[in-house]
Length: 93
Image 1 (cartoon, rainbow, N blue to C red):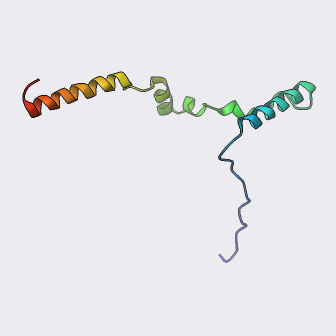
Image 2 (image 1 turned 30 degrees about the horizontal axis):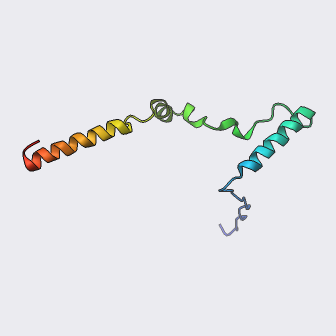
């Protein structure tokens, strides 16, 4: 009950990344792999990108269907509603 817990280890999280640095790291990994310094079965950092939506049904449906209300349809709907409001307020088209 009176034991103190170990403090958490510091793990810096990068919010901003450098595309140049990422490309350079990938190039270095590719060269090392070709020279035989790295195993060929190493998992790439981009390996899991976009995988979450494949395994959750709701996210998968949302990514497949895309946006249901496109901007031309929304514009037409707004115009129809404005005409309806004008007819209700004024009484004439």
